[in-house]
Image 1 (tube, rainbow, N blue to C red):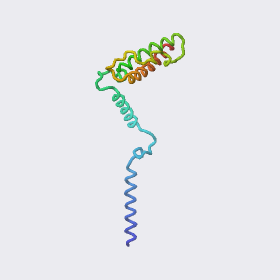
Image 2: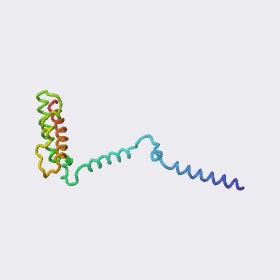
Image 3: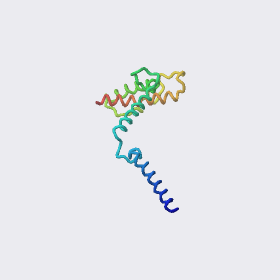
Image 4: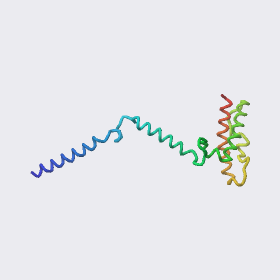
Length: 141
């Protein structure tokens, strides 16, 4: 009699666990055949929200300018790089932003109120490289 009780209890426990596992959809268990439409829509929405977070809170609606473009060093470097990149491409020179004196100096327009000269140079050079690439490619189209 006691063996029957143990066997019956074990069978009931197994049935309960099997029923719980069957009720959970396979996609929730990580065994689905890919994302369904709801998952794709959710991922798309999350991606849109992530881009919204990259926009500074204080920027005007529709403006959407990343903060690095508003730093004076980056902005100056970007503009100087565009000009130099377009000029180099127009002359038929090779792509080489580092060869430029403006890039090597890295501190035109620096004012002590901007903070560290080294940080200014780093931001200027980052802007210059990006601007040079944009200008060079634009001129070669």
